[in-house]
Image (cartoon, rainbow, N blue to C red; front, top):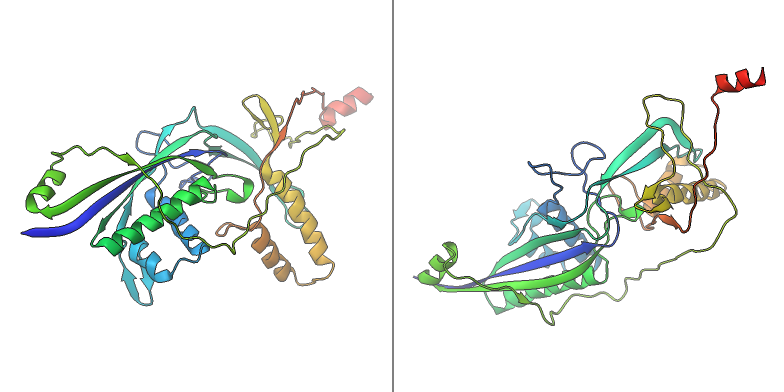
Length: 326
């Protein structure tokens, strides 16, 4: 029996340049495998890669052919396989604190403090994408899709995981390699199935890619000094752990969520001056800042406090203040 198809396997190695969060069933916790190690599911990777192709306005037929999905009442099976992301390098799981903000008043909700696990920048993740190509045209199209994702990671335009509007999920591409298996006879197929031949992965060179020059991205950065103290207050709830400013390793920072909350509240106040309908205001804010099931148009990052020096202060409870006054 004769065969005439090829299997191509691409190996991506990406490195986080921002904190990353892959949410699990327990809110605020990372997804973990049976051994308790963080893991990134292949369907999450696939969802982000599909969204990137849609952003570049790659034809729906091409996306459906390789990534599958519904076309009318029909379901088209994916022709590519995306493995789970293997987290190869990270120092430990970190924990970030936050407080739920009242959207109407822009202030912290009482007793709504939460924590969220995340992995730090420089975390390295590897995953594979493979496809059985039937002819030369099929192979060229698949390679072009891979080339598009390669460029997307190089440009740091593909983000993975949650909390993306808060500066999470940004990666750079460390390396991309591929293996190619040619199947023309039963013997070649047997040797592949039983791993009789070791095929070395080779570096990828000059892959073509889909592009859309109409898509623009604008980045703003702020730097400077301000003559104010920065603090984080808590309620007297004994069940909550009392902590101070947010700190990652040796650097203090203001969380992106706090900065976004301030900006979002100011925009809400501005919109309320000429729009009376609260539902319309909320809709516009969700389009700009995102919501649980949708990424917004503006992405914030943490504000790093350089050369910050903490100052300890004594804050008395109400009863203690009464006794001092006596």
